[in-house]
Length: 355
Image: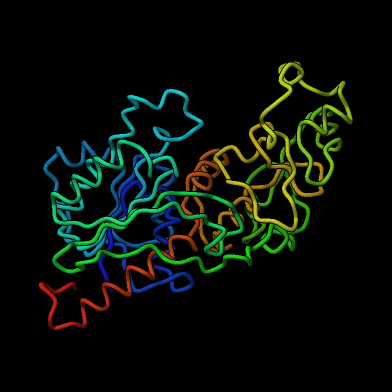
């Protein structure tokens, strides 16, 4: 087993992709850190290892020891790079890759994997990450991957960076080739078997029904849902029921084609974000029912197995789902890295031994 540290771990979608045999396996999570207490409760319900709830910089400045590991994974908070954040320049969250790399160095890891939004790849920050990593003996390979190409029923594009110690991997470790290009998993395949949701709260039921609850929309909201046809969006609402259109949308005649949109049965989902239960935030209406998708449907569209245990309130769980890394996507990267680590572990010619 390769020893793994998970930073900014959230609920553990990336961890799941590495440690679970359904996606990869061969790793054990020995340490995880995140400032979100509810997410760490979820992480602890699914994975072993030491867990720290807190700020990564405070952890480093406390003088606490960093455990030795073979690999460090994580996604420094991405909102500082996101196109949804109009004040990206100067956002302090942009610099959290620095303590991430500090823990990589202190742990003695041979490899690190960093995940972030697609915009990171062409940012000035990416150049700085590369310079810092190279100065500490790592070679980097980075690329934008689409989760749908790796078995997730969702078109979620993210920058993945694999850093590998040059003394062990002279050419670095490349990102994986797509496993599902041309045969994407659809929304129907992911959620088509679920019955109608019941209630509006987390249910005292076995998965998948525990998180399969609805909302309590107003009469006007329900009428709006019903006015959107399959594959439609807010412009169809404007055409079919203009009297139901919110005033703020009347003056906006362009952009936002996903707002108040329906998912398509025969395509992957759009990117699942933290407020997927609000159709006004994106294309989050059920493909045919007059309602937004449920927490369980969102979790499945992210690629979480039904037996993955979530902890927290409805809002906290939604945030965990929307911020997660699709496990199948992480698993593809994990398999690529494991093949390289296995080669070093078995080779008597390695410059040093990877445990």
